[in-house]
Figure 1 (cartoon, one colour):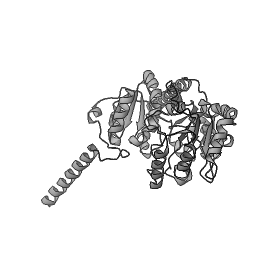
Figure 2 (cartoon, rainbow, N blue to C red):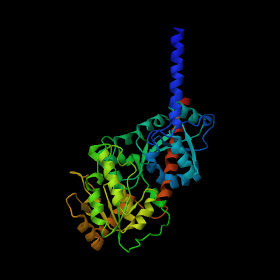
Figure 3 (cartoon, rainbow, N blue to C red):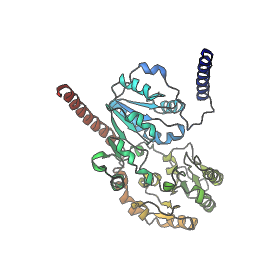
Figure 4 (tube, one colour):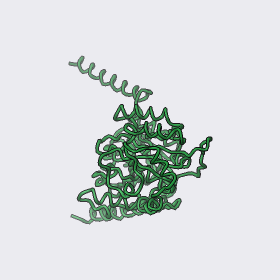
Length: 404
C-alpha cells in the first residue's frame, strides 16, 4: 500500500509539472486562460477601491480594451486594479494601460487578496460564467458594463439580475432590457452613462485611397455561439460583398477577432474575404477604420451604433430570417443575401436617405456623444453606486451591532 501511495503521489506531481509546462509554453491557445498566478501578490493588498474582473483570454481582449481610457479616468479618482485569469492578457493590458494588473488562478486567491484590500466596487465587461467567482463577495457592489450596446438578441440576458446595477449606453438599451427580461425592474437597476469607449477616440486623419476611389468599410460580426443570435454575414455574403465592390471602391475589411472559432466554414469564408479586400484592419483602431471610410457595411452588432456619430452613410446586412426589432433597422438601408450589393452601395453613397433619421437616433442609442461627457458620467455613476454601497454597508453593520 505504501508503494501504491508513492506511485500516486508521483503521478500527481508529474501531472502538476506537465500542467505547469503547458501553461508556460506557447502551445496553450490564446482563448484558454493560463492561470499563472502572481503568487507574490497574495500577500499584498490592492491599492484600489475598484476592481475590474476579466477572467477570459487574449481572444476576448477586444471586449476590455475600449474601456481602458475610461478606467484610467476612474483610476485617477478612486484607484483601479484589474484581475485576470490569464497572465498573457494581464501583461498586454498592463503595457497598454499602465494600470495595476494581477493574475489569480482560484477563487481562494481572490478571497485572500480581497480580505487584505479595501475594494468597494467590481466591474464586468462580459457575462462569462466565471464572473460568479467574484459576484459571490457581498462586501462589493457589482456593476455590469458590457462591451458595447447593440440590437443583437444576446445584448439582453437574464444574467443582468446577478449584478447590483447595469451601466447602459442609452434609452434604447434600457427599453430593450425592460421589454425582454422578466421579473426585473430595469429602470431601478440601470444607469444611463452613454458610451465612454467613444470618448477614447484619438483625433485621426483620414487615409484616402491613393487612386481617389471612395472607401467602403466592411466590418461584420462573428458567427456567434448561439444560432438564434448568429447575425454574421461573412459566410453567406462576405465574398460577394467584397467582390462586387472591389473594382469601383477601395474595400477595407475589418474582421471580428472571433471569426471561425465556432464554425470552420466561417473561418474559411473569413480567409477568402481577407484575400479579396484591398486592406485588412486587424492592428488598426476602430476609429482609424471609421476615419478612412466613406461608407460602412456591417451586420447587426455594436458597430453601426458606434458609427452613428460619424454621420456617414450606413448599410446593415440582414442575413437572418427574423432580425430583431430595432429602430435602427427600421430606418437604415438593409442589404439582404439576394440584393445587388453594388447598386445598394451606390445609391446609399449618392443619396444617404436615412441620414436625418439616424442623427435623431444617436441620442436614443448613445445618450450624449459630446467628447468626454460619457466618461464623466461613468466616473460619476461609479461614485454614486459606491456611496450607496457604503450607506447600505453602514446600515448592515449597525443592525448587526444592535440587533438580536
